[in-house]
Image (cartoon, rainbow over all chains, first blue to last red):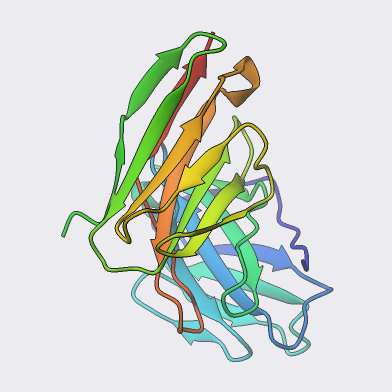
Length: 109
Length: 114
């Protein structure tokens, strides 16, 4: 399975944008890039996914590098509720997900 | 819809005891999964099922057994619990046939083995 590398932790101020990076230099052409997050004491939840083009939804935006070796999850205005562990996962259409340790995001009021 | 539910929410076992964790989903999903999460780590896949009556091993299957007798239920069994199995267990389900294969997770079961 292709691996991803994320910073262990990041900090942001409330109502400011947050850019969460993910490196995946061994990504294959058919791997989708998925982001999940895990709020304290809860199971993970889907955030966003993409293949080649940048993607937007109500929760976040996903910016994918042209060579697809890295991506960035963008939270446009962080709130206290966004404090969570964010996981960047590569998945080839139906393969099992591999969750790394993720990035722990702290949001300061 | 309740989504994915897990029973029980908490459990304390003594070494050598057995127990079964129940996962139920009401979304008519084909795929179901059992993960464990140790402190400060990501989730690791124990077993999964791609349909009623079928199961397969994941990354860390030793010491666990599973059964999928009904589409909506996925059971995880510990025959002889060990302290190394102290963890939070998450169940998930998904529907195949989409590019993103979104997994829906339950709230977790916190298991302590003394």
